[in-house]
Image 1: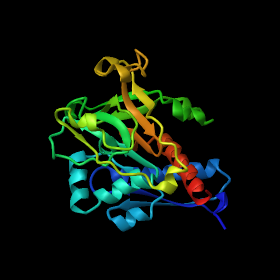
Image 2: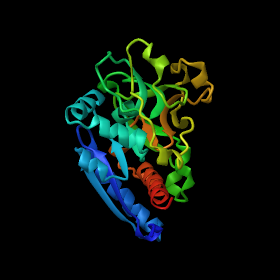
Image 3: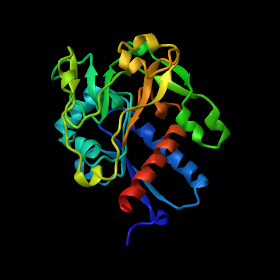
Image 4: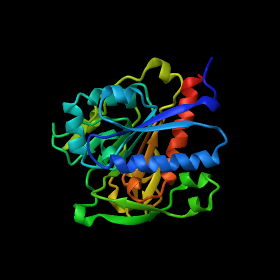
Length: 282
């Protein structure tokens, strides 16, 4: 007998190789408490730090935190976690959210990177511009209007989201959606690309990869986007792309885990719930 909505036990992991993983775990717990008050369906949530393939295999969803993307990639490589992470994101297509460094790792292409200097996981058909806003001393906060949060009936969801940008990347270019590697990106100087991984056939029947959705922008910086095909999808006064989603993968340039505001974590956990119910009741 398949699972019902009333017996959904969900495990969410936070990759804990480097970076702000503990902050994510704390905000996930807060978000789960909020969901409990909103939802009459009882769910058992488990949040855990992930450092091994066995721990990853127990997860229904994963967050890759902010930190140093090169360091996270290097530790993942040395601990034999890169391939399991690619399988999780690109083969079995479980919900994955990357913040700041996590967004870089989940991109199919990243510039300002020496060849061989960093491995990518991939999953988002985008090119990211690393450290777009400069050095750490140039970090800043900004009030963001995030339309995807407005689906909630709480009055607080209508308030701007205070985002923290620390040596943040942006999405510089939306890439063509495809099953193979981004060959065109391989020809771009100082750019690395993620390896291709075929989606599991059974998963392919239940998920629509589609194109990349722009989920949030930073106002007033459209001039920084160099490519007309990407700029055309952004309002002229809207600005840099700082949140995107494609199928099971979500990425943000900023650090929601450092704000104490759980709204994005609540929203993302609801996406995880939908994925789990679909997988367990095909």
